Amino acid sequence: MIPQSFEEWKSCLIKCNISPNAEWARERLKVFTDSAHPETRKFIQSYGEQHLNNVIQWYKQIQ
Image 1 (cartoon, rainbow, N blue to C red):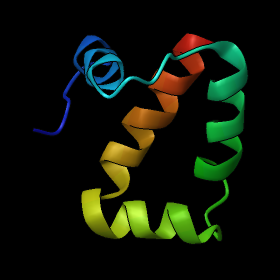
Image 2: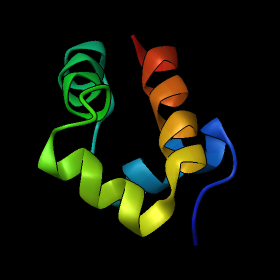
Image 3: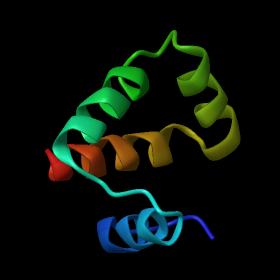
């Protein structure tokens, strides 16, 4: 399932034993806002740019 909202996404993180916090979100944003980063490129290939934009906004909500 691909999360469609911040709450769904956050719930998925918690189920995967990821504790979202501001420091973690900042580090992830560094990756996902770098369009040349291999992880970002792979994410776009797998999920598309719209979902990447959603995830970036969700990371910003954690900060």
